Length: 244
Length: 246
Image: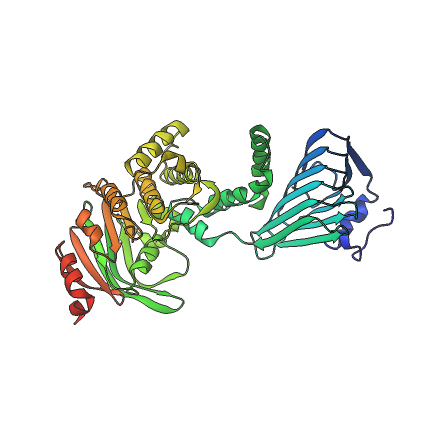
């Protein structure tokens, strides 16, 4: 896309268009996982990273791609993934979005199942404080050839303040008749009973909030090995400090 | 230890406690009994400082300080423990992390140094063993997948590690079978000392056969209407609350 997006473009409806204009045009990065191979990657997009990243990922037949994303700490941070899964490919995404102050943090994914027997699983957890906005727009497109596709996406967002916003937009486009596509989205606040339980045991509210939030976000780090998980959790803890 | 004077409190604008007075000295075990809706659980939540329980009159002095002026976590750090009737499940946070965070948060507020990881594990292991809670369960998420009895044992494990001056135990006996009741009772009795006090809130005399209180109070319609010794429990069991009110 070379023309500047507008609010009418579905994938950009929650974007900070002023920020987008400053960074336009955005180069498309490519990642190819050749047939039969496995690739694991972490994208930690924080203060120093480009505001907008657009990554096209091709996963060859029976190849596997595991991606962990932490998107936080920027006035505007957008990561868009365009993933193509060939026959028997497997795509695993765990993503954490942290929006503080007046930040707009987005994750936009399109996962195309173009061959049969491919699997994709996306777990996205978001937290928004202040007047921040976190958004997840997730499209799964199954072509006619994508029989026996097994695709799932789970999005949960936590709002720490009244002024904070979360947007969820799951979208399924299915042209094959024998597929499994699951999606779920939930937006809520911290459990007041759990907060009281912590308080009644002597834990100050800010510390309890941080622990509960970290536990909530760590769903997205499931499946990582211990070292990668520890590193990601440490980074998440640091980035959460901005939530106040 | 605890002086409650003419305490009035309401929930959603509805008066529940209507001038409740009660004094508990160090070393004593008190029990509060009473019919449903008398205000037993409200009293425990007001003492712990739960949101939504509004004090409209009276005072509570805990170890010489105004308890009601403190935030809930400060009350805990000052040595007040509330054993919940329905312990909460917290997915994603292990019992060990929860308890260690609580212990060190309390110590920090009291100006005491943190307990090291190794020392904490020793404390937690000893407490779990005493209360018959398999230590593996301490590694699981807080109360998740725990039976009613295991949740209550877990409350007692927390109490033993935190060593409060005053433990307010809200229906800690409900949902326990006889064996669990014995273990939990032993756990409560082990807390008895000249420096500690316990306030048991219960429906049934059963618990009081195992943890024999120094004083029993009957709470009805937001006030203590009758106080007596340990024998009062059996009289209540035989005659009911209504006879006493008449």
